[in-house]
Image (cartoon, rainbow, N blue to C red; front, side, top):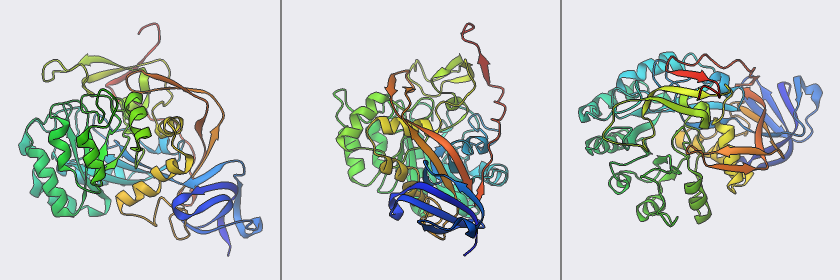
Length: 422
């Protein structure tokens, strides 16, 4: 069979599909058509030698934010082309009133594949916080109508628990549960800083639902002071709730992760929660604090204007998250599954993406794990030094090499300052 593109000699790693070792990948149009050893190079129009590199399905980032015109929404294509992320899932930027715009302005205009968890609050995340302050924004019938018109791009329903969402009344949680059940969709819940309390909100999750920010270090963290998993969190995981990293600018703690993972609570999915403020990592500083409910020093989203100290290169992208998971003891096959097959299962698109099996879309991440030291930081500035790190080599999207492009210009509420000015 003639191929349009042949990736030759790479160390293929796709545990879910059963591929491991040096294999060639043949691509015809936008589909994978062969995964075999020693495919003749003359059988392909274009051959790329990827020997010495790992080759995996294109990464799926289950928690990101990229709806244009919102506080959080960045432009994902430039980042995806340099990180191997070929499928982006927006986690609640759009509510019912913004879902059609999400399809028209985000999903339709970007090159990468796109899905959305739809916010139970119909205003979504147009601003930084408090979309659930008014429980009446959580309108189930409106959400059901909007999702029914856009079902093909919908991953599930999203709700933010904690001060950042602004919902102390549990009405939005009841409505989110009802909407997810009536639509036959998964519920993704964000946790951060109480109120409400973890014990009040985790029981709303069912088997197959996603708990994002599961390794956060705030007052809704999943561990007790002694490091043991909290009983309510243990019950949730035992019932089938899926743990997601959702790193972000305020939601990953080394202390939490170092306690939970050795107890057997590794993430089912690894996601970046990438948005403008998370992109530049621990060098983000709040500049102007907005009004909040009382004194909330541990709030994860308390500012409107944000300073970035020093350089402009991405920090907390998905590759940085994968490096942290490697440092924390997850194996390479576990990590690959957590950004390929597992999120594909959550999205209900197994066999289409997140796999290298013939017939799947030709979305492929080529990367290295190099023996090169790196300083890692969590959102609290806690530091760890790792001796290995993930590095991008090549991304194939829809059967074509995805050329890298410059990062887009940041929004008005984000500014860069030099070290001295800070």
